[in-house]
Amino acid sequence: MADETVAAIVEAHRAGASPEASVARAYARIRAHADPAIFITLRDEAEALAEAKALAARRAADRALADLPLYGVPVAVKDNIDVEGLPTTAACPAFAYMPAKDATCVARLRRAGAIVIGKTNLDQFATGLVGVRTPYGIARNLFDPALIPGGSSAGSAIAVAAGLVPLALGTDTAGSGRVPAALGNIVGLKPSLGLVSTAGVVPACRSIDCVSVLALTVDDAFAALAAIAGFDNADPYSRRRSPGALKEVPRGARLGVPKPDQREFFGDRASAAAYDDALARLARLGASISEFDMAPFYEAARLLYEGPWVAERYLAARTVIEAAPEAVHPVTRQIILAGAKISAADAFTAFYRLEELRRVCEATFRSMDAMALPTVPTVYTVEQVLADPVALNSRLGAYTNFVNLLDLCALALPAAMRAEGTPFGITLVAPAGEDAALASIGRAFHAATALPLGATGAPQPALAEKARVSV
Image (cartoon, rainbow, N blue to C red; front, side):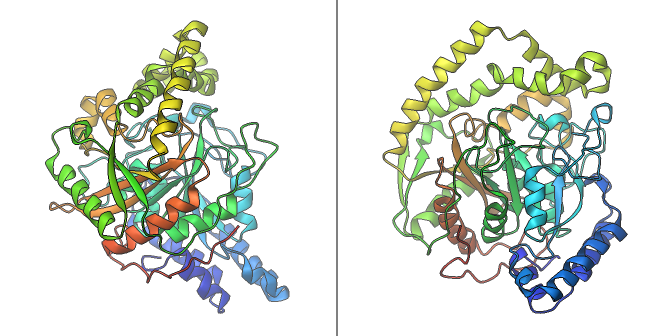
């Protein structure tokens, strides 16, 4: 799949290529890549092949099945999302259980024609942006094995970036789908809250969790979003929202950027220069760039781990952390146990402040269509993160932690390759409901970079003037 996008695979299958062969290639590439830390559980290959064969047989009897948007596409699923027949671990063996059915998002993937290959590694209980807080091994960064892979959706991002599968599901509460996308030179789509059901997803912060999409191109990510989006009565946080439809490459988009003295790169000059270059590229594409005050967004970001939302993480892991605290990763345990100490007064104080910040942020968006931010300010080695796990993780979330709290949608995009050969990415952020608008801008930007797809070396496909996706 190294040179195959979702769109290319579906087109080939519709023309008569075998979904069974595509699934077999995915397994062959997983074996050849030989990194046991990417997947926690691989589905039995014979079972996946049988599903692909049966899908093709049904298609032969009913030609309408060829119109399935993900017809025969192999996909990976983060191991905090239920897949029937495979254990859900959340990267904590003591927590593991066998789900009775697919999560809603997985069921919708299958309904769209996708074939699940396996469950991917993650920062335990999706708590972390680093990809190293797991007992299942640290997946190798594809561009520099000394660097962290990013998290928490580390395995899903690497599986896509390495060309093992063209599509994967992750989750995103603080940036877990965007940070590893940036470090893998791929697209990470974080939808509006409630657009994709979280029924069957192990909660991190249940009130603001999102299922995210990791893909090689924006068009692929948006096709997957269109397939899994929709109201779900089984999820009390589900909302009646639509992803909308991709449009012609837009011109004149108003993009906001932090004031120069509010741009934080923690001394990483290469990232700062890459960000300036990305803004220049956006301007050449016709966007108007203006500065805004980032301070209230930084304050909202701090609330995520300094406020009551950590108590939600405690509730999600409570059964394990109370019965067998030693079974939880020590850093994860430290973070989650802090949530047990949050008082109701602390919670309401934070809720009130968040609403005040929400009003400020809403006013900010009146003068812009979207923000254009660095996805991460810098990147660290595994050794550095193991030595200073909390502070460095916090730095990685500087531009991501506020998004879900403020009910915004976001799209992480590859932007450049730094001189030492590691990727740099930007993220477009907009108010809820603007998922399609972000994707319409993002696909034009990604195409303009002419970057190869992930770590595969394959060139990007030609950008169609109009997208084929509508909902």
